Amino acid sequence: MLAFAVIGGIGLLLLIVSMTLGEIVDFFDGIISTTAVGAAATLFGAAGAIVLLNDGPLFLAYTAGALLGIIGIVGVAFLARKMARISNVQPHEVIGLLGVATTDINENVGKVQLEHPDEINQRLVFSSSPIEKGTPIVVVAIVEDRIRVASTSELNGY
Image (cartoon, rainbow, N blue to C red; front, side):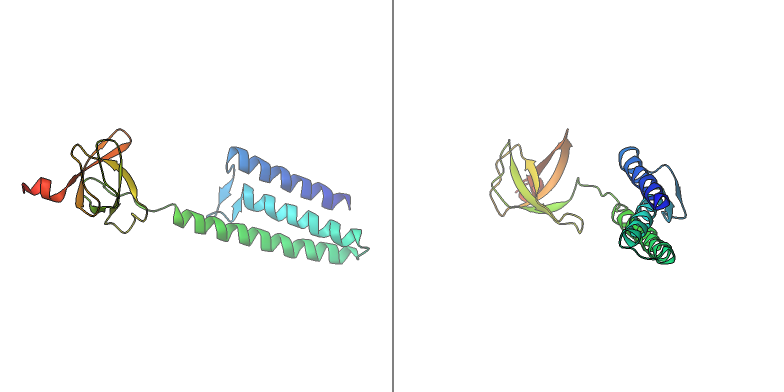
């Protein structure tokens, strides 16, 4: 019982360290990482302790612990790969993108929907001249953390 408690405790400590300091060890694309090993050790210790606390035999405690440990390490590695794939989206240039004003836009604020596959949310923008809702727009500049737009007819000289 003590062995399962110690291994589970070390696993929890590894999880806490990986959550606060980040991954210390990361081999084979996340299969052997601080988080994966911590999760596996925690599950191994918990499963073994649960079996022994319910008067189960020692071989069943080791078997259940090993199975849950393997499931834990594979599950964490799978999720780490999935998260890495999500975060590998390439940035795109915003200046020059076309879109449509979804609200009236003035020199302070407005909203647009830009036409780009990665632009799924509306953006907060401003314009030096008023633009009405539904007007086609183009992004002309990024000023600090804000986006400046102009109507496409304004740029074409109409």
